[in-house]
Length: 114
Image (cartoon, helix red, strand yellow):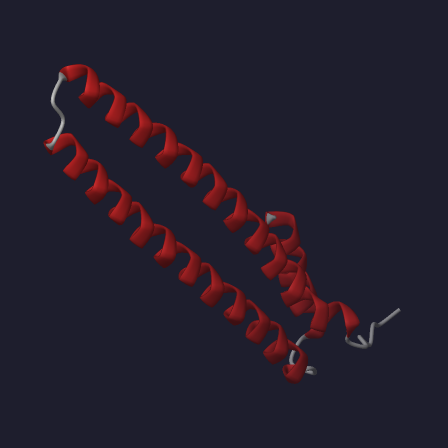
């Protein structure tokens, strides 16, 4: 992922000031991607808080230490699974951001000195 972002930066240097429109479109793609990431993180945080609240309510109503352990174990497992799934999705989103942001640059005609 960092190599793709580095490549985007190197292409910006090659473009210089001659192709502001291309750079502007690229930054627009990055902005859209980061907004989508922010929405994903917000949604994940909201769901995690709701899940923790429900679990706490279950713990309050537990009748035995075994039930407390079972509730806590289920909470830990589902929280971990949700976290891993969300991080996987976010990493895919970051790769897509780099890919989409680099498209306007890689498709732009670049005048190179040879």
